[in-house]
Image 1: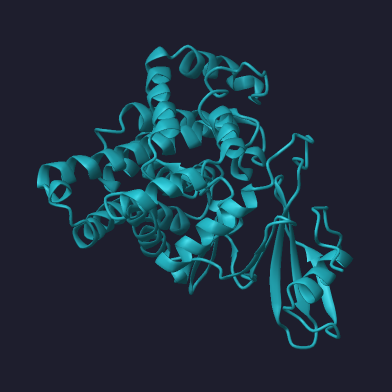
Image 2: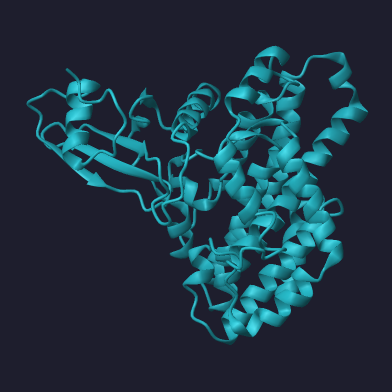
Length: 400
């Protein structure tokens, strides 16, 4: 009788038995090595390698408790991740790891091993240049997002997907960490270096105009079931090499505004750019990253238009005025959510390494203030910035 008929947190030995006896992905005689490769707080991620054949898979298991705090979490989040990866694999297979199995009882997702790719965040911190990144990520965003809206998808099926991707626990985390605590520190969990405490008070907490814009973005995040979004598409969820990218870890997936994913990508590109600027980074890397930020914005805009023209057929939606307004709102949302991502990663307790590992001193103070100013600019001026060149120009003005 199988031991995997009731959920428990698997050890390395259990993982071996799981992939051989339960999933039959390897023979019982295979010499397997299991390594935990995840560094996240939400799931346990194991790489399984057959030492003889070299065949490998990754097993990602959800537990009932958050690893750091012990906070209870719904383990069905791994099913949500498996389901969105299958949908996205059908839409953009070149950018998504292949799914081999989802085991509902164990809340374990078994998929393609993408260890030939590296974490984009770490690569950018090492100032590595990827000339094709803007082309690849913009294609992913346009082809994975717009086709899941009811402009393209059957409206009845789309409504069923909205129900299936109601991701209460994970959305609750974002609603707090991204849209509430950075502006209203009611849990007293924000982490701000002492030299910037007053700056944050004046420019964030007491900035009523900013807070009103954030309230609008928060409300749209919670109520606009526009497209099936990844929900946490920062640079740590993108793996890369010179041949391409793979997008992983969509456990925050839900039906929400397209701009949330686009904005997360754009916002996270400003962290290595700011760090390189304030800590004397390589000039060639900075120039490439500025160009990449501009190209991501412009190419997403152009490719969304192309996908819209190809996939949307209902005459009401092919109306030129509606189409222009719809796409302009998506791009404005994208900049607004880029701004909320930047601010929360500087102020909140879930920081990015580009900020948290930067030495504290005059450079760190100036870098954080510049990022916060850019976040404010993106949120409050999101409808006025309409080109990638203007987007980068505004950041350069802030850093000057």
